Length: 298
Length: 289
Image (cartoon, one colour):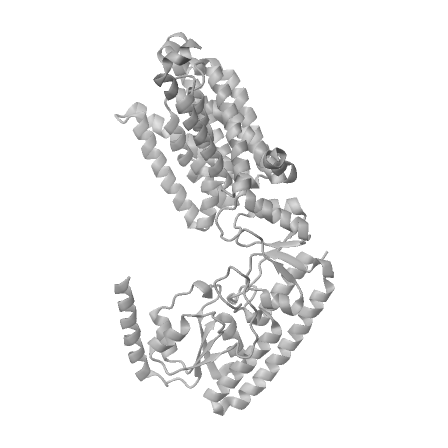
């Protein structure tokens, strides 16, 4: 363990010293984002003037990510590092320092009032602020300002792109609200193990009820199953999004016994690749609201 | 109070009723099979066969997901293949039957794990290995009940030669030629019941509901009929108590059922009326009564 860490540190030092000398060849502004959703924002604001890399790629989980020497190399060449903040990427500040890079770090959630995390979680605040579209506009403004400071020559272009993108986000926000409005008020809740939809719930009024007693993805006991069924019946929850119960037969059993509908996949922390259902942030939000509406509408 | 503890879980939740029905069906067919396995000193053969079935079930699983018929069919084929292959090797070479079976079942198990991991994730493998008695749908229940019925009917037909073969195979050979076919049919029943146990308890524990009740029964009865009766009752009782335990204590259901059976076994070893340790230590007092 200690040895492998030493090797990692050495390779980071080596890689960064190597890279610093050879940088600046590229015209485009090099930006590193911690995960795909931030990278999508940067791409939309920067257009073809920036080169953005997401450290945690499509379909990967930023919560359990461990940086590799290649990531240190990427960061060392970057001019700007975009992070979510709110404790989402605890590993990144140290990585920036150890990579020896000179990149500016911008925290995209600056100015957002964080929600408290539900009890029993390891964060103190809920970092998944991007799930509310109004928050996404704050992200965009923070990123735009940082880009303009690092690359003043293109500031006007960034401003125009950001304005266009914010207009799209406004339309998205209106669409999501309109779709939620179509769902009868009593049906606006789902039971879900997703911890990531706190901001979405607060912004649009769809409740995400956490199943009680199911904490891990180990095999549920009869008590766990009975608990979930009783809870769904009592709170009259019309749809279930229980992705961490991995046995499809169990989910079908719960659905058969409660009359609740089985929902599809919701994307929370990561975009998919080009072929997936959510290659961009706007696609992701549209996919999620469509999935919710399909499950809740009758 | 007692009602809340013992009956309410089943009246309130359908999945509990289904689990109970499943475990009773498994007990009715599996426990007698277990008794014969034990009498023929083949208790561990059941376990080996359970693992030998894996590649067949895995191929069925890969081709059509958690499809019952595909998994059952694949399991049957793999089980028969291993049984026949090890029989052929044992008859024609120096290797004894147990060693032949051991090599084939290990190879079969490794093949099964490889196949499951080729597609699918570890989680899929866990479904195959552990089954789930809480997720019995109509189809699964029907297959379990069907297999149990077939098993009981077949047992009724081959009962006499089977019993004779257990106690005195040489005698059976002198009076009848039913020995070999009886053995084959019996092995088929073993495989069918193991596949049955798969859906409810998974590969690892499917044997548990067959062998443990047989072990329990050995301590309470001297004749085969009595043993079968005790085995069936103790298997069903373990299933019921295990489910209740899983409901109240939050223990995974499959292991809970087997652990209850293991508990009953320990009690039987200590206090059984036929050869129980307590009886052996204090024979006088019991004989006076």
